[in-house]
Length: 481
Image 1 (tube, helix red, strand yellow):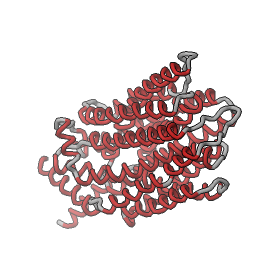
Image 2 (cartoon, one colour; image 1 turned 90 degrees about the vertical axis):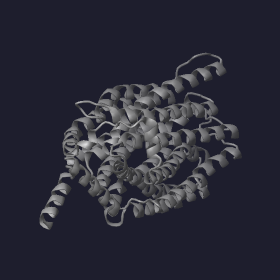
Image 3 (cartoon, helix red, strand yellow; image 1 turned 60 degrees about the vertical axis):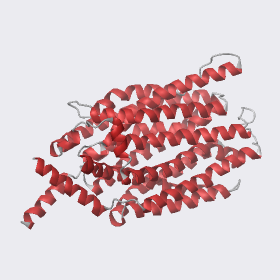
Image 4 (cartoon, one colour; image 1 turned 120 degrees about the vertical axis):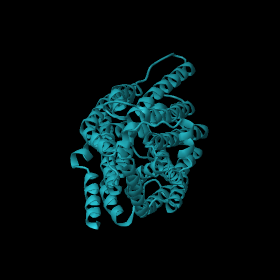
């Protein structure tokens, strides 16, 4: 009897293992969205203020409006993808049909239309143009990215395989970020002193490249998803619970609230830092823009190189411990940037290296926790609702980005930020602007990271608890059969 049970458990474990090709194809699905996200987070604010000439206050508002709408449509897409019935599954039709518009609207963000010779009228024309394009681009970003992220729980139920799967995903994600930074650096060197043309080329190349990996993901993972659907038919059942009841159930899930809090704290820090770092490097450190690209490369390169290291360590010590280790180094780095003085260039890169260790765990840990939450919810409700959970994670990420960027740009505008010109590429900023930059890169992210560590300490789903959840789900399914 025990031998048979052990054999069944072993067979089940083996059936949950993913082959390398599936992992690579799944990881590729995050490449295109990572490229566009990195370009948007790192370059859109300086593009709007310094190239398009948009007032910093309006530049902050246009990004906030776009991200708020984007966040609002996340739950809509999540619920609709949960309810989609198709021969290709619940998620794939969204990716297939949304990929091309996603690339087109990304490109349209990087052109500078002219509406009037009157500066005020032209500024408002630019505001409404970039707001409309931001809404459309972010809507299609959701259409392709949210169903993609929900695939994690539909490809395997194995606790450690999910961490491994996310390692591949974020390797491509960070790789895409690095590619975007390198491309921006190369374009700036090949087309000097012409910001508008630089961004047109950057938008066109990234927009085209971002579409292709989405189809690679569909092609490379569909067979596996169909096999899992046959093995676990509950993963493809459409959700019949009304939306508001789904929301109530989701937010009564204690483990989900902890994951939301952890993710919120870590990504608020990522996005607040990414929004202010271009201004920190040029205005505070008084360095040319290419140093900003190298700082980003240092952070993202370190984060990518550490993903598989953290994944291996996680198998030994658990997800929470890995998160503590990465966050401790990241907190030191953020605090160090606050005290950094112009001229301390080597120290700036050391802090960027340390931050990369923490950013890597911010990518890896919360997303590997979420599928465990989905199964706990399934145990309670009897339905698979990846879409609603993943949509709220993405919802929070976008709200954080919109709020962080808006706050930074509004404060810079109120403090009297001086735009660079061809004659004065690095103007001397007022002390009030420099104070905004330093506080935004030091104390604010540090506070958020400490809060994330506290929440991680109380996160309830351990490896043992997850194994028990899966056992109960299996027993329930066997009774139904």
